[in-house]
Length: 173
Picture 1 (cartoon, one colour):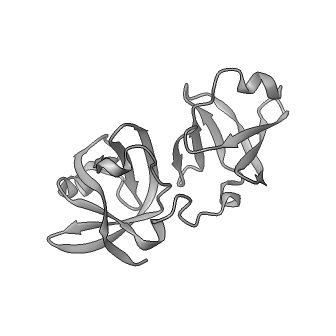
Picture 2 (picture 1 turned 90 degrees about the vertical axis):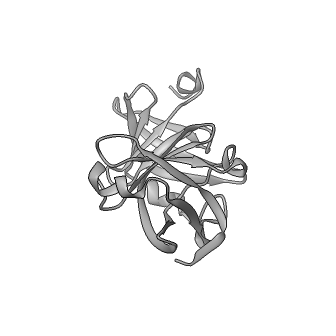
């Protein structure tokens, strides 16, 4: 994991919830195309300190919510308020080197918190990957794996939270 001080992602503005999630105010160039992040560096007392990301959520605009591996209490992350967040060199691309097959067996949760199903595989089509999801009713459906549809990925709980367009599920069923 290499430190890249030239790519400032944003600044931690506050602790968001009681489970250690922090809110990052993003720099202007990251408000549209937010990356899937696996790790970042926080600038603490002028020094880069690496952190692995357990959960991320980009609700839109210039806000990103992160939970760091091993930091699940607000007391642990409150000292990070005001710290600048830098990308690691491995995060410099949109897919950040993540293999979509890592998402196998993740639960797909919809925006209303209902469970859609479990990822059983990934189909890599040119220009668009599709999640093969087995629904709780036992049917198999295909869901586009697109950053505009993904609200957040919780690696610890193995959940992909998605906001699917109206009618997409009806086409599959």
